[in-house]
Image (cartoon, rainbow, N blue to C red; front, side, top):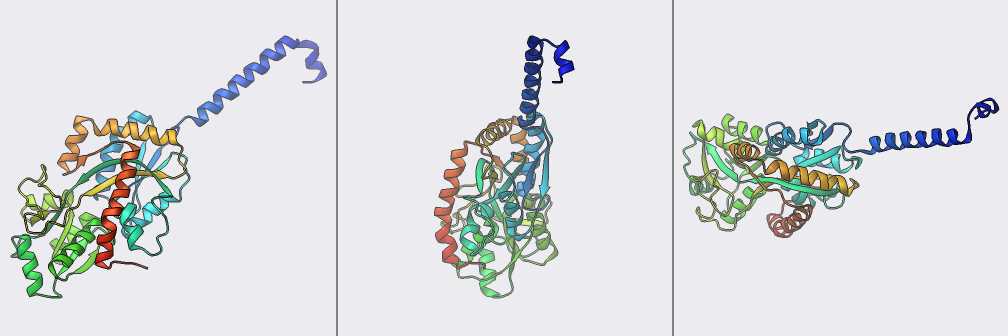
Amino acid sequence: MTPLMKKFVSPGLTRLVLAGVLVCLGGVAAAQSAWPNKPIKIVVPYGPGSSPDVIARIVAEKLSPRLGQPVIIENRAGAGGNTGSGFVAKSPGDGYAFLISTNGPLVYNTVIYKKLSYDPFTELRPVILAGGQANVCAVRADSGITSLAGLIDAMKKNPGKFNFASTGVGSLSQLGVELLKVKTDTFAVHIPYASSPLAIAAILQGDVQFACVPAVAVMPQVKAGKMLALAVSTAKRSQLTPDIPTMKEAGLPEIESTAWMALMAPASTPQDIVVRMNQEINAVLAMADVKSKLNTQFMEPIGGSIEDLQKFMQQELRTMKPIIQRTGLTID
């Protein structure tokens, strides 16, 4: 304050003005630190129409008004889901970048890849297990194959003539078939695709003979009469596909698996933000219309705590690691 200002401003008024300035500054700082104060991005490491893309968009529609900010879906497909998953793992933990990924990039690839560019157990932190669904093994309707036993028989009689599609290297859609091959002493060439719709398109075009991919991609083609569903990968028949037999019913009791999708955040994301996202998404998954939309896409909402997802991922690693090692699947 200049000497001229001191002449006309009393000490009491000076203290009052300074206090007001501090209050204003504090309010600005609080506004800047409030979360969220800009759009939130959820990265899907697969293409549009894939299972994680579908569930991400259904959840985002309800999540945006609850958070008061747009929730934007960004597809970053490639390398069996590793590209998008790794991108989020290396992103700043400011609460504006999240990932919705699947079994492979979050668990299996830590065993399959010798040099994975990120560690999902240390560079990402669990938020919530969003949903899951059965994989459905299917062939083209005019293939002449009408059962899983028939598929196995055809592969044995025609060695080297069968290709199968997956949603990427290390995905459950690959590992389920790799285990099937081991258990039945059959052979088929793996052809990875960036998403389940592309894998289905490959079957319809005749580029591959079969696939075991998420139901959301298979069932519309089954209902249209273009594909035939042979079996589901879950231990029990799915309520959403009650007419499709399980692998166990087909005589393969050890082949049981579920395609799941989980929301993750960069490891440095503050705990309070992670907790808030968990609470908000749990609330969204509990909505009747959200469950209905997911069921229409042959998905089941799951939800639960942050700790639930953390324990689930560890259990998945313990379960699948020996299976992956048994198949001999490794990538440098």
